[in-house]
Length: 290
Image 1 (cartoon, helix red, strand yellow):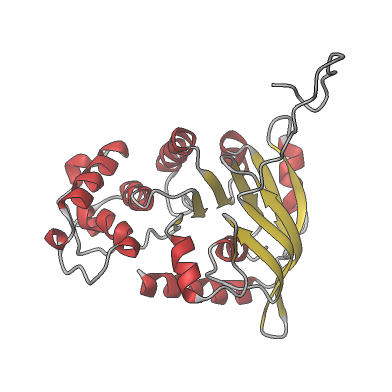
Image 2 (cartoon, rainbow, N blue to C red; image 1 turned 180 degrees about the vertical axis):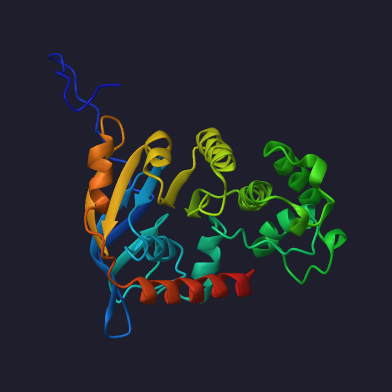
């Protein structure tokens, strides 16, 4: 294929080069909680399809708020958000529900139903595409149960299918949450501090799993992290946030540790409490929808 920089021989016509639209686009997005808390401050950014982007920043810097704008769990005070071709800001509920079938999310605290079996927790990832309530594992279609087993095998937990979710370790719970996200067949995977509650060994295992699956499935991944070292080994791109503003946006290749840590130069994290309240409300809304 001829690149934009190649010379075209005489008598030949250069092919028309069309840039692929980004999977996600933020255009001048500002988000306020109440009068005093500015969680996002005029954020403009694009996220290319099939790439892993990590959001770095202090607690309260806007990482979780940005993630929740991608699938419409939160709406901007001003500006525009487009995900997979859908304008998210101002979208009606039915449009958002349709979008969320293609956008899965993995949470810091797993959001599993403890008394339910691991297998049923994974099956619940398909609730958005099924009609009617599902009161128990065998209320799910056989095809869903079979695929749930396949996803559990993929994350190394097929032998835990009929164990209660609350009997698992933290690392195992996050693997179940990943399997639940994958059964949706998402195009976009959001991960909000997916290893913050895990020990270093489990953290490395979960991040390795996410990276492998993202590349196997050609997923667009946007993941918030605190751990710079993990981010540098995991991401294709780093976006640094400080007090709701983008202060770093660069490819990971060639990025030094010092440059990555510069995101944290300002210790004060404006709006921490306000963003936390908004995030908790958004998570509750997603749980009710499921």
